[in-house]
Length: 484
Image 1 (cartoon, helix red, strand yellow):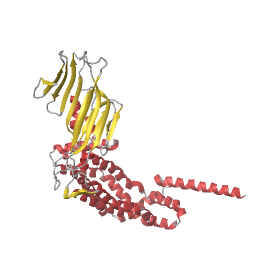
Image 2 (cartoon, rainbow, N blue to C red):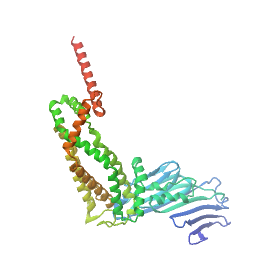
Image 3 (cartoon, helix red, strand yellow):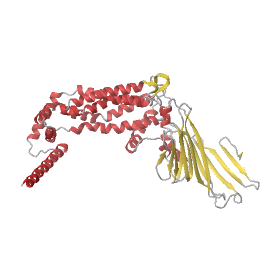
Image 4 (cartoon, rainbow, N blue to C red):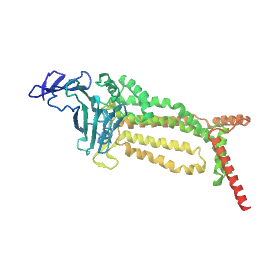
């Protein structure tokens, strides 16, 4: 091939036969974005190529360099990715060597790093695609060897041009989304799928909440640490009402604990556990208390916390942005480092990770104290194992998150700190005597209402109790018949 038609943004690589027939590969850089178009076309090559030829084979290989400070974290978010035609995006293993032969047609193939990607797109879906990702060793300066082999449609007569497009650029969700404005295909490429936002529910939270808030705050020119702080504050404001309802539900159970203990003393035997539970639920129902009310904030918060777990490591806006002692929020902040790797820990200590785990421990202690105030002696014994797990969880998180990004650890630290402060504030502002008086008023109102019946869990336990009593009655009748 020889270069012809060379300009500052175009070049044609031409292969010429002795009779003047040619194969041209035209390259064109699109201005002000990260795209490179290239077309493959032939002229007069029919006599040199078999008439049955309708495709060309492409082989693409790359050794992916390590660009970020932490090998583990960057490697975890670097993966060979491809999109099936009219289907979802698929990816090879992030941590192991994997090879796959794709039977379906493929719209594009991406050699993806954590924050940058090289993507090969075709106007007509590619066939016979074989992709491989080979994991490389740490400290080699590289992450993986990527390779892709594929077949693309080709018209040897030269009537139709084979069109391709390369994207070489950052994994920025909005930027990747805008690349469809310059597509060479008739279908949307959906390159934004390269920025993994989580599984369905979590993805929608990131797609329609986190991204919009993050974009708005980023455009204000605020430091990235302040952006994450404001997002955390907004999330805490959103969940404050259900959090308060949850705390009040626990507080109601706390002030009713003497009555629950009296029921436990009334039914001390294990075989009376169903009666004890039924009467306890009936008591809660009469006083207008929902034992399940404490679960609501966790059900609301958990998808948001998981959403941020997926969003922060993929936000290129955090790359090389410093905040406080962290010189780069996209990777770990090491306050102490050493030369040799320690299994499960690495070669450093992350201060934001330590703060996150310490705050997690504080939050767990406050939560367990709140739970113990509502439990009877037997329930407290049953919960001991769960409480030990809650105490050990911060230690598990320390070994897990020490290699994670400072931005993610910072978010969880602030979130748990605000959660602990909210719990402390609600405890200080709750008057147990007034709350008990209000519950007694509920009890009197329900007591004077002959139509008031147990509902929810109390009603289900009552129905279950009746079923058990019926079963016992039938068994006794059967035994009496056998004896006679």
